[in-house]
Image (cartoon, rainbow, N blue to C red; front, side):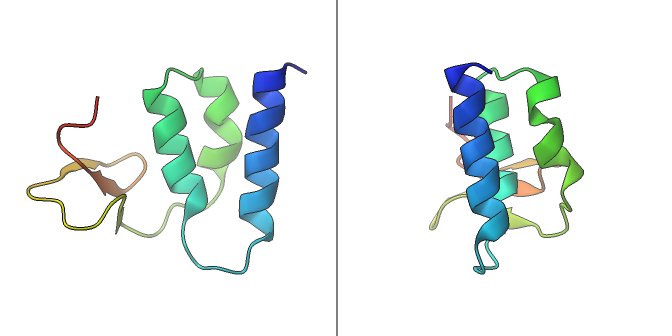
Length: 78
């Protein structure tokens, strides 16, 4: 397992053990996908329920929407 994969697994474990109802797996998956992480590494995040539509940040004007991750994000996000 590479160091990069270890970091992803750690994040996945942390997000599955928290009692806070924030959809961390959606935010994490979206950001990792934008960073170029291969789809097969995103599979564990995509297998988790993606039920909520939510905002990645507060106070965004005319945010863009990613339907795969069901989240709104700043339109100017690289």
